Length: 379
Image (cartoon, rainbow, N blue to C red):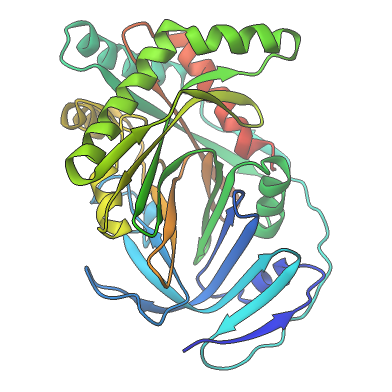
C-alpha cells in the first residue's frame, strides 16, 4: 500500500532532481490539467499480471519489438510501478510512496538555454526514402506509409532535463508532455496525439492525420481550405477507416465523430474521435491499435516492412505508445511524436509524415521541419 502526504514545493521539479541517479518519468495530461511524476522503479509486470495495489503504472512500448541501436539500449516495452509518485492537480501536490518517506530540497529553478548545431543534413536520404515509398504507392502496392527522420543535434553541454521539460509544458500547454529518464538518457516530447483512452467500459481512440503548418498572414483561409484538402483528407480517412474496423471487430456500439481541427503550437491536424464499448483491458487495446496508419501506414504489414528496411535510423520509442494507467485500469496512451532523445551533450530529434498518392517530396520534408520545432524550440 502507498502512503500519502501533501507537499508544497515552490519548484515541482525538486522532486525530479532529488532522484538524480534513479529511473523516473513525467506525464502531463492537458485534459485533466494534471502532472504525474514517478521515480525509483519498484516493480515490472509480466504479461497479464494484475496491477492491483499500485497507484500508477507507467507503460512503454517500442515501435518494433526488437531494438538494436545503442541509442535505445535499455528502453523497451514494459509496464512499471514506481516507489514514489508526485501528483500535481488543482494547485495541490500529493506525494504517494512506498518505503522510506523523503524530504525534498526545494531548490529554485534557474533557466538555461543551449547553443546547438545540427550535424546531419539528410534531404538526399529523405528523397531516396520518399521515392522508394512513392513508387510502391504508384504501383498500388500500398496506400500510405509514414516516413520519419532523425536529426542529430550537438549541444553546448548536457542540458538539464527539467529545463527542457518545463519549456515543453510552457510552449505546448494543450499537448500531452512526457519524459522518461534512465541512466544518461532522457526521451521526451510534446504530442498532440492520443492513441486511446479507457474510461470504465468506454474505449476512445483518436485519428490524427493530415498536417497544415501555421501561417499568421493567411491562417483563417488556410484552415478552411485544409479541411477540404483532397490529399490530407485522403490521408486522414485511411486512419479513421482502420481504427473504426478495429473498434467494430472487438467492441460494441462504435461511434465516429465529425472531423475537426486539432491545433498545436506550430501547426494544425485533422482530428476524428472514435468510441466503442468494451470490458477488455487497455494494454490489450493498445496492442490491437498500434501502429495505426497515422504512425505506420496501410496495409500495415507492407508499410512496416518499408520502414524497417529503408529508414536508416531506428525508431525505438519514437511514434510508439506511452501510457499511464491508474489502479482501476483506466488510463491513456499517447503517441511518442514531436520527440527527442537526450544522450549526454547530444539530442536525437524525430519527426515524420504520411506519404500518399498526392504527396510532394519537398513539401513533406518541410512539414517535418515544422514538427521538429517542438523539440528544438525548447533548447
